[in-house]
Amino acid sequence: MPLLQFVNRVWFEAGAIKRIGAELNRLGVKRPLICTDKGIAAVGILDQVKAHWPEGLPWTVYDGTPPNPTETAVKAALDVYRGEDCDGIVAIGGGSPIDLGKAVNLLASHAEPLAQYETARKGQGKIGKVGPLIAVPTTAGTGTEVSVGTIIVTADGRKSTIASPYLIPDAAICDPELTLKLPASLTAATGMDAVTHCIEAYLSPLYNPIADAIGLDGLKRAIGDGALERAVADGSDIKARSDMMMAAVEGALAFTKGLGAVHSMSHAAGRIERLKLHHGTLNAVLLPPVLRFNAPHVGGKLDAVAAAMGLKSGGEVSGAIVALNKRLGIPASLGAMGVTADAVDEMVGYAVDDVSTLTNPVRPSADDYRSLFVSSLSAS
Image: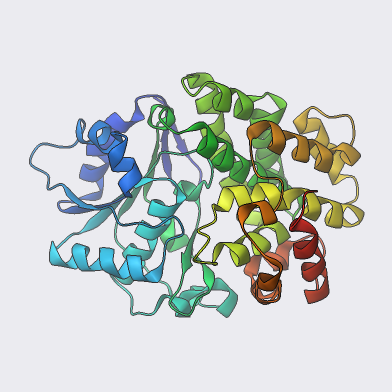
């Protein structure tokens, strides 16, 4: 079984979940808290994990993770962690449970509130060593299992990026068999999250040729080789599931360069509590207009993106994403997702302040973001 080690230990293979006991033992965890959500429990994935759980090790579960994890949920999970005298975390699920697990791990050894650690507020210097954490992704999208960051809606209403090398999971168990029960709609949405990571990281102006190569390879797997559409069409296609899980890992490894305006806008829209918008779906919808906005500022980079996608030229990229979204059944606009014009001004303010704005190929102004949001309310 391949062990991949770049920023952390990644066990990557169908059946890799059998490594869970060995990793818990290696880290010396005796009383883990399992952070997950009710959907993961409902489809039987926890049973798949439990089949490989070490005999005699406590099985303590917090399954209250919301679709966009909040500081309130983090503190609820932290209460369970402390009440059960836990000494480590196993985060099982998509990006939300893993991000929640990272934040619980932070507050288990650091003072509240979470907002003080936000990257945009230069809070990363306040973050020190945390306890052990194992990430077990059940979707192929965020790549948070190999990343430095967590995204939490903090108590002050911000969808905050908190990042530090200390937040990287000690181990990730990437078992594509755990994604086989993911519905087609979530396969599409999470897959487009991975695609957006690969593209935005590559287009970031920061210098990192290694990250560039990794991002382009992830994009080729997902779109150029057709893994995303194959996984959506046939959820039992283990080769497609494996390629998408790798594309998600690669997207996160690539975004060590930072992301861009798609994520700034997605974070701003995703904090609208009443709508409970899915992050990957937002990225998919916002990617084409931001690509068109960035096109004059990226030189020939869009040609490399096009090549990875199997297209002839960079001029085709945004249109190809629009067409792909349609084939995947993703909404055509923010308006179709329930976002209304009266939310634009507030979203603009959050997008301007988002840390991902700093690594967009050109820094959008408030007016730029306003135009992008308004245009995204209707179909591209």
